Image (cartoon, rainbow, N blue to C red; front, side, top):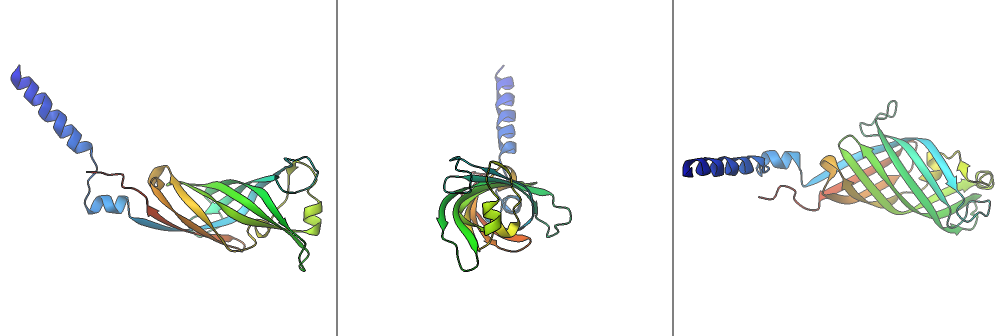
Length: 195
């Protein structure tokens, strides 16, 4: 009886030891201290205006939701990732000399990548021509270009969620263009493989 218990305890301890992550170089390559990603926002798949205050125009408090096609491999011909996001208008600027209506927005969303998700949030800008702005009168689909949504360079905070992105935080620098470029810098917030 005592021998059976000893064998059972021995195998239990071996099982527990076998389940814990290896903390040597192999673990470091699976879970590096930092990651750099370059994502391309290739196209706007859909954008929907939500007239939160029912004033029949895009104004403070209103939201626009987005779905973007995203590429991680630098090729926008067949993007394999997606971004789901929303931005809420928090401030509007008077019309500028360029005849664009500019808004400051609270921007947030999630990049859905094969290796995990990246949640981003921060302040952003939305620029529309007079005709584009006046054409948004009721809730529903709107036709916006990447240049409207990412008119200026700005930074967003990033939190990794799921897969190999879990435990990472950092920043995303968004550069305007077609496609818009999102340079993500992440570092490990905590170590998952505690010994």
